[in-house]
Length: 206
Image (tube, rainbow, N blue to C red; front, side, top):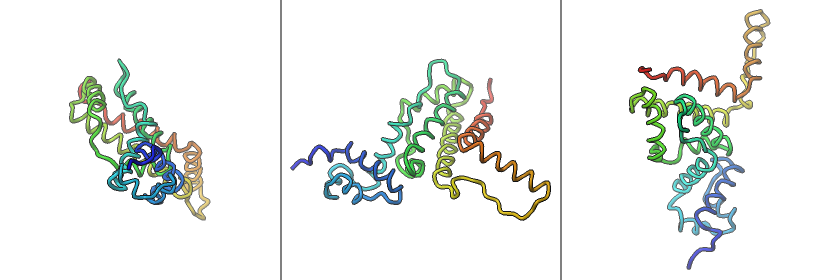
């Protein structure tokens, strides 16, 4: 007997995203997703073999929906594209509670072939070898994922908390600098690290 339309694959993934955003990754369970849909848990297995299989689909959906800048524009410089792509990936992960942890732990490392070819070709045209281009894209992706994970899981809202009784000039200068950095915010912190990483990835050939 077929399941009702509301329990189709797309509806299950959408319900899982609601549960993820409400409870966080540790609170996602097949039972919670079934409850969100108003169905019995075994109905989910008609579409997904396991919770891991479902979470892979959720990760794909988050990236498909919010990671919109994955292809280079005609004539775009490689560093402009890599920056834009990293920002897009970060926005996608931060759009959902624990999105970065989910992306880091779910799915395959194998990218969509056409997208990967377009990205690597852009960097090859700029002087990277194919291997250098792949490694550069991996490095930026890992930095972006790690930065997003830290932002979503950091205690104290990401503030740098230093407890000290020192009041000398050196301590005051350092603490004032820390307050300034915190005030700049997480976006500025991410952008600073991303720019430094990309500067270090310049191709050997001009």
